Length: 195
Length: 168
Image (tube, rainbow over all chains, first blue to last red; front, side, top):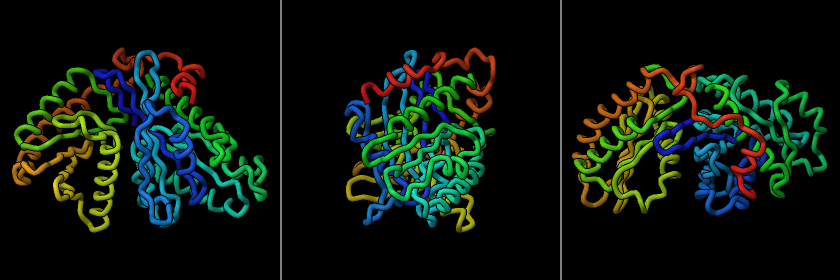
């Protein structure tokens, strides 16, 4: 849910990184945090377990440039990927304007990807969001691994809507900003389309 | 109250909200008051907020209230009316307003919890009125052809998006 503040001429949007456990959602945010100019970012907050697995969410606020005089803020969230944190994932999708689905390219994670995508769609419905209408991009992460599934197979399994998709190696930053810029553009276009 | 798909706030709305928050902050003798959207975005604030990092504060407060709401439902409760954090020097009082916004009151050593709760109840009604009026107003973002709908951002180009990120 976008928050447009005419008094302050600000547009605030919420983006959520969703995907199965250990697919690289937090790594995406860590790379963005590392690379974005200090003046454009707030603190990266990670609610994680002692073993650095996301417990509730990661949060990174970005205060980007302006579009036609409206200062643009994106609040980036990740969900906890582990199966038993389902209730938390549902809460974090509340009010999302856009979602990045981060898929793990490894063959042995295909089932987890498919399950996670189905869960996401159900949780969006639970939050009153039409999963076929929300701005969504797919990131195929871990493309550098030997057991990575070919892109066309991933596409067949996960991208029936023919959504924008990106290959990524998040720890090296490959594909991270391409993905973020794509979802940012979709969200802003959606906001404009509705007006 | 019908759900608002997008929250659009104009100068006069913000002015009313700011007046409410300032009065609440003063009368409750609290350090600061924040009004937060349930999705975690800060709407307005009053009091000593300069030393606060309000953006993550808003996000974490929303997460906390959302978790409390989910806990309540698991226990068969409609909701918990407030969430309270009690530290050595600082205390936080979080409450939902009409299921739409969160009121965060930061208490310091000079604040009394009972007074805060009393004033929160009173001012929550006033703030809820503002949101009720917002919800009755045609949703400018969703309503096609409404001149109020235009944030005047025009066509979004690839260059616009690149420029947003600077050299990122």
